[in-house]
Length: 102
Length: 199
Image (cartoon, rainbow over all chains, first blue to last red; front, side, top):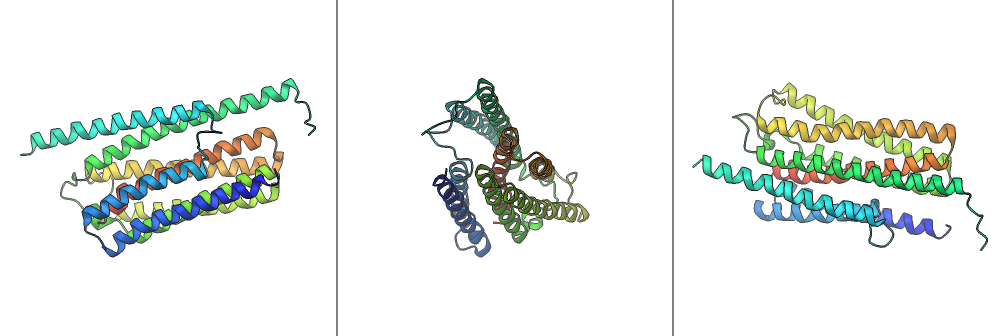
């Protein structure tokens, strides 16, 4: 217990610093318009995915050794559901959009 | 290493809390599905402004940055509260919970101010499909944060009155999952709503 606490504290601090960096980059890009819009969008997307992973790993402490198997399975299943539902919605709606508004 | 033998009752209690942790995790996954579909709806409704104001005219980058900072710092301070709960420092848990609460209130205040400002400008949820989707998505997140704040008050009172007993620390752990989860949802909101809207 005595040596476990500094380790856990470090986890929160590392997560915080990484999250600050991954938030600052996209905000700074939008603030300065340093890159063309398409590239900025790409960076925003990559930074968001990385930041979600950072939150899961360092704040929610999800990993593949100590996290119960059921929790990881539920998370993976949710990701599959999200992919199907969000991807399916986009597919249908944008297809409809391109068919109806010529 | 002498480990005090665990009574059957204690073991049963720990098992119950583990089951509750899984149950709460399943609830959070359901919540993630709700948010993802609100995100999808929002993304599809972005062009549907019905001649009304667009995100570029309405959103303020500084406000979104400040909200992001408040929520992120509050996520970390909640982590400190969890660590102090493990170490058994009741006073420190209460202090970090109080700081988390103040940061969360600041976030809700900024959001309410933004919403009322937009409605006063005639850009309420009834103006266009885009704004309906915006208010639903960001408002749902705001309601979650408000519920989290109420929960922090309730658990703060339990920590103060009952102390760091096993049921209380297990509730604190679930509140932690909830609070960190809300920060993840916010990452989605600023990355899909505010930043692309202001490009």
